[in-house]
Every structure is written in C-alpha cells, then in structure tokens.
Length: 480
Image 1: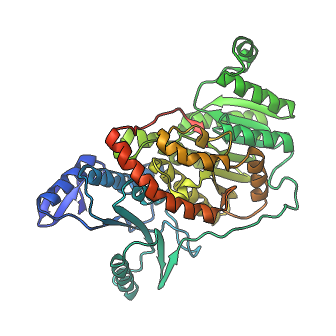
Image 2: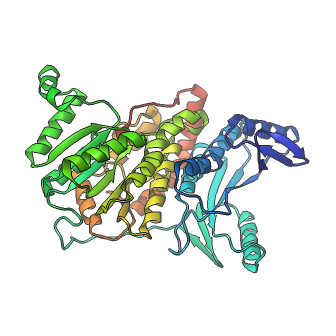
Image 3: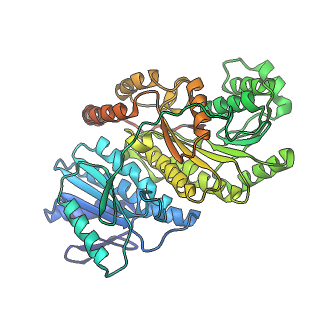
C-alpha cells in the first residue's frame, strides 16, 4: 500500500490510497474481500519518516493524516465489513517515544496512540500495538537487525500494547509509583503576585487552579475562554438580573471571590487555537501586567461517540485545543522566560477510554510535547495525566449512554477532590518531572481494572449498536 491521490490498483497486491479519504479504505477492504483475502494482520508504517518533522502546524497536520486519521478510517472501514475474524494491527513509528533521552522526538506522531488504545476497546476482534524505533543508517547491520526484530515481533500474538526498540534492546512502557514529599518551598516555582495565564480558565478545573493561585500568591490572573463573557462593566447588572444557578453568574461569583482573595483578574474571550486572538491576549497581559511568569494550558473539549460514527469534523473539534492550541502557545511564549508551562492531560492518554479515541490521542500529544521540551529545559514543562476530578472537569459533564455511564459512577465517586488536585500541583511544581499521573486510586490497580472492564464494555457496545442507542455527543469548549 502506497500513498497516492486516490485508490488505484497498481499491480497484484499493490495499491495506492489517499490517507485523507475515508472512502478509499472502504474500497480497499471491499477489494480484498472480493478476492477472499481477509486480513489477519495489518502493519501500519506511515508514521515512519526519514526526517524529523518540525513542530509547525502544517507539518503536524500532515502527520495526523498519515497517523491518527488513517488508523481511524481503517477502523471504520473494518467495522463496516462486520468482520468477526481476529485481526492484529501493528503501528510502527520512529522517534515518538522518549526512552534513552538521546533520541530526537516527534510529538506530532503521538496522537496515533489514541486509535492504538481505543480501537481494541470498541472492536472486540481487533488488537493493536505500537512499536517505536529509531532508524539506523540505511544499509547498515543495525538496519538488518531492526528488520529482524520487527519480523519476530509480528509473528508473536499481541500481548503488550506499547513497545520501543532502541538498538538491541526491547523496551516496554511501565509506570512507577512515586510519593512526593513536601517541598522545601511553600509555593515552588510560584512568585508572589506573579502573572499567570490559564487557557480554559473559566472551566471547572481552570477556576479551581485560579483560586489556588489567588490564595497562595495573590496572583495576577489572565483567564481565557472561547465563549463570550460579559464585559466587567456589565457584571453587576448580569448578577442582578440572573439567578445564582445561571452558568455565567456562577463563574462571575467565582471570579469576584478570586479578587476578594487578593488576586487581580482579567477575562479575555480568545480561542486558544486562533493565533491572532491569543497574540492579542498575550499583548494585553504584557501591557496590563508587564510580564508573564507561567502558563497553565487547561483548554479542551470532551470527546464523545464511538469510532464507527465519528466524522473528520467532529474529531478535529476535539484535537484542536490540545494540538493546535499547544502549538499556538508554544509559538507565542518561545521568547518569554517563563517559570513553568503546565499541560493538563488525562489518564485517558495512557488507558484509552471508550468513545474517546480523539481525546485520548489529543492528550497523548500533550504528554509527548512535555517530553520533547524537557530536554530543552526551556521552560520547565510538565504534563499532568489527571484521573477524573469530583465535582468539576470534563468527566462530570461528558455525555455517555446510560448503560456505559453506570461503569463510570464508581470511578467518579473515587475521583480527585479539588483540594487534592491543587495539593498535587504544588508538589509537582517542586519536582523536575516532565510527566506525572495523578490519581486518587492506585493507578496500577486502576490499569488492571480497566483491562478487565473492556470485555464487559465490548458486549455493551454490540448491544447498543444493535439498538442504535450510541450517538456522537457534542458540547462547547470547556476546560479539562
């Protein structure tokens, strides 16, 4: 299979396909089935590149076409054929995973982990794995060795999902529990009356973190969000004419509370994916406060709906705040001496989540960005894989079919309390970590439980698809 402008048979068993056209994948599967060549294993190599891609929007978008979207369209095509035979999908990439600390990294490829983790959760007969490599010199003995390693790997049934080869070593992704002690500093990396930008700052978690900054250092806060918000001179009238349960009134009361705690707060309507709007927001920060000391990127949109029903437009809406938004921020802050950049990721990036292939991939991108920036040490960048928060955050508002929602109740009830979240953030700011999982449940046990839950979820999916009761959900931008 080669990349082309459209699906075209070239010779026996050789075709071109346009990675951006979902219909091409349907045509390919139809062609193979007509020849009674039902695939038992698929090797995806379009995320192996000879050169490292630049972290520029056009290059990152190209990587999504050959990585994330090609896997999404492939899964949809397989689903349309109603295949029941067991199928293995192996996705090979290079320079995606940070293993030795010496390899150049390509964070743009990390979104493919969304399909790798979620496809098996939604298609009971399909198993997936990601194998990351570093390409040795062409024609060298190291290249021959790598090919041999991959061929051996492909002969083995999938048991591990995330694998990396570095030289002669085979690496598996694991997680280690870390107990963080109290920092020597009361507020590490925070400045008294420091200036902080929170994207998605009017979302549940954004406001919790804003309150923490207000209480601890009387911060000067710039909160951005995509939705319109009343101008400051309209706040009194709004509160006088709207019930306290009104969504905007609730946010206004919280902002006023921040100011009562000693913070100075500005609210700007700005879409984090819009370079012009965010550039104006940064200019306003500089004009109003004269500096910027830290950024918390909390903007995001919850995913919703099974892979089989997702459209390119729906997926793009989920990916954009985390991917394009991060690239916009990265471009705007590159010459600013920040104390920190915190990226609010999710445990979905590690565990995957039913109905959240796009959200899983988007957060995997954040984790990869933090690893990428870690070796440059400018600024200190931390990606936090939050488990669900109680009371606030996307997990409380994501719409799921009732039958599946039941399985999330226990998880939410054991979720992170707001006070626990800010305590974890304080301690993490006192470390040199680039990525950390924060969970109120033992994460290793949670991972095991998640694996066990997949069988039950797969049965539910089959039942729900028959009754047509799973639909793609939509919502406005909120904060993770």
